[in-house]
Structures are given as C-alpha cells and as structure tokens.
Length: 358
Image (cartoon, rainbow, N blue to C red; front, side, top):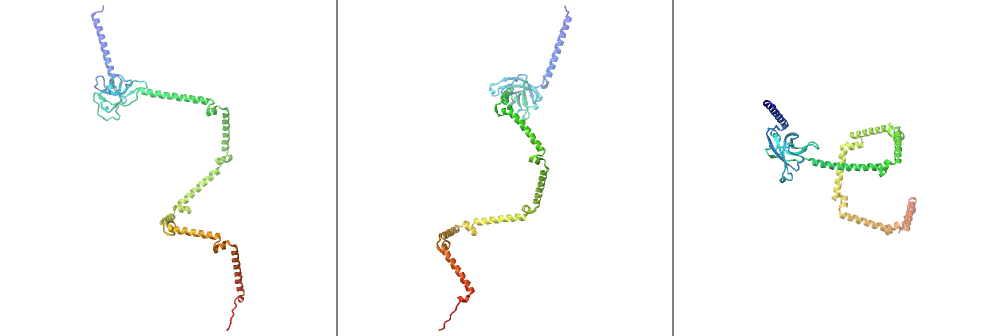
C-alpha cells in the first residue's frame, strides 16, 4: 500500500501535467487566432445578408481581399429580409478597421472547386467611413458553388452534344454516304488524286525548266528587262510631267493655260447666262415666243413652197417638173448663144442703119 507521501507526489505530477497541457492548449489557441489579433484582441461584429449560405457555417474564415481578418460566428435565416434572407454574423479584428468602410462589399467565395466557403470583403472602390460594431456591409453578386456547378453542367451537356455530332460526322465520313464520304472512300477518286498529283508534278517541272509560254514568263529575264524598261520610261514620263514639259506637262504646270481655260469657262458661263436671259439673236430664238412663232411660220411657208415646187405649180415648179418647158428653154438659150456668136463674128450683118430723106 503506497504511502501518503507517494500519493501526494502522484497527484502533484498529475497537476503539473494538466497545467502543462492547459498552457500548451492556450499557446495553440493564440497561434491559431494570431491572424485576427489573438484570443484577447478586441473585435467588432459585422453583418451581411445573402440570398444563399452557399456552404458558409460557424467558424468559416472572413478575408479582406484574400487576407484572413476574422471568422463567421453565426448564421441564420431572417425571412423578412427576402430576397436575401441568410444573415451571416462576422467578428473582425479591430486593427483591420482602417481598411474597412461602410460601403465595402461582402461576397461568398470558395477555396477551389471543392474547397470550403468563406466570406471575402472587397474595399477596392470603397470610400465611406469605418464601420461601427454591428454595422451591415452590402453584398455583391458573387457566383455561388451551385451556380458554378449548374453552368458547368450546361457546358458539359453542350460538349456531349458536340461530341455526339462529331462522332456522327466521323461515321458518315468513314462510310460512303454523302459527297465527302464518297470522296474519301472511293478508290477511283484516290487514283484520280494520284494522277492529278503526277500531272501537277510534271507541270511544275516544266515551269521550272522554262518550257512553254508560262515557263518562259517565269524564267526568261527578257520579260523582266522589258518590264523594268517600261517602269523607267514611266518614271521619265512622270518626271517630265512634273517638270511641265510637253503639252500635257504644260496643262499640269502652266498657270497661263489654267487661266485661259478658266477664262474660257467663265465666258461660256456668261454666254449661257446671256442666252438664258434672252439676250441676242440666239437668246431671242431660245426665249422669245414671238421669234419662235415667226421662225415656225417661215418654216411652214418654206415647206409649202417646196410642196408646190414638187407638185409642179408655178413657173419654178414647171421648170422642175415639165420636161418640154425645160427643152424649149434649153433650145432658146442655144439659139441666143448662136445669135451672140454671129453678132460677134459679123456685126455688120445685124447692124444695118437705113436713112431716108424726104
């Protein structure tokens, strides 16, 4: 049977062991809570309301742009706050208040696709005062894990549909269905492609060897020389034009030619304006209705005269249409010519003067 002293010593060792365990536990708690100022650091309480908790629970981290500044202490549903009924209460170290503002926004994030959820506070564009104990921070519409999974599911379904279409297309190409399938699986087409490749090789060889018209165009330096000469001549021509040489150069550079052309255009404009104003003979012909009537009457009279002539009316009409009258006039003119000729040859024969005396 142990003595009283041994029992007391055993109890003392147990007490020392418990005291050491409590000290170690206290140190671990200080280490674990060092990110928010320690166990006895002064903290403030903040609240935010979300449409969905999205995996947030008591003890979840609260971060400020990725830096841990506190923890979630309580979550509950407040129905009267619809459509954002989930109230998340947070405790944040007081030393981080200088980086927080009343218009800082809180959102729920996820550490990776399958990681724990946490509350992230963003103060990038916040300019309000520091929040007080119990203040409410507005929330931003950060995507939840459910929305990410839902959108991923839609994308996966679309990818599956696309893969099914690709499999169908490959099956069609492997068969003889469709134009492309026949092109890929027809042995005759393969032979034609091989033959075409051989022909192309022959043609390319002929071109490289300078055979044929196209081969000479590619390999003959004469064409290059002629083209180079043409370019030189074109450069010379443009240089002469810029220098004002020749007729075209003078048209481009001579100001006198420009002034004369401008003056001619101005005179033409004045002439057209004068005609439009009814000035001068041409202007009256264009604008004066009386002159137009007189001209029309004159043309009508001339037309009637021409009709009478064509109908053989009047002396002039008879001369145009009556053959016998033309013959008589021709005969008369012939006799008159003979008379004039005889008078010139023997004027005494025709000029006889008789004197009678009483």
